[in-house]
Image 1 (cartoon, helix red, strand yellow):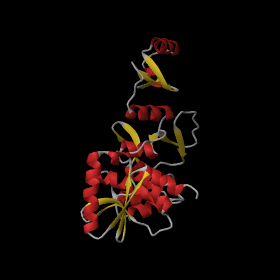
Image 2: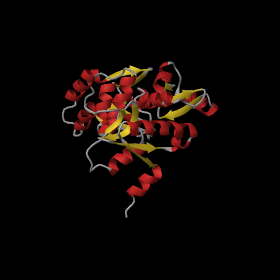
Image 3: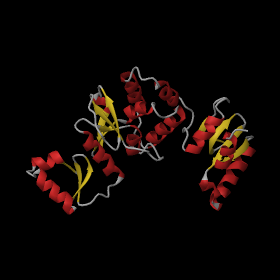
Length: 261
């Protein structure tokens, strides 16, 4: 990728740039940002293009940053970029303005300017629940990209953010947090019950939700496979031997539970 400013610095005039766009050697991605040769970008390429389009000081943020850090496995609906000051942009990606981005809160990963893992967790309090944040922490820790002290320091610098309590709760969570939309839906349906342990180990098995004496498993589409059904049966038998009742829910079950009577 290359910016119009970089091309101009190399002596390319606006007319010459237009010729190359017409010829297909440059492909416009965003205003002032072009792909060289072809426009089939990887996910990281799309991230970099958005950061370049947002201008000086812009960094990848939010779920996009969590995805880059490999701490979020689900789909990301849109690219999220943070820009300093009151800069206003017309863009096809999400632009968030910030009055101040502390030097400790951003870095570069795979060549892309991005919020640190600690700052990413702070920013995600605006959109994720505590169990979802717990899963981001779990994934980041697995890849050795989570630092508890740095996270608390980022929380201190973010004094005034309204939903920081979600991250504080996630930092104390027992288990790996919710890993799927189905698990999130189930948790909403049982919100009036005492909170369960989420994606934790019971009797040597990792289970989706656990209460004293009871386990709930959420069966997504992958649980229809023969091998997975056999593994589920082994896990269920082991849990029952350990004294736990096991209840299973499918996506259809959750739809039925969530429908008005």
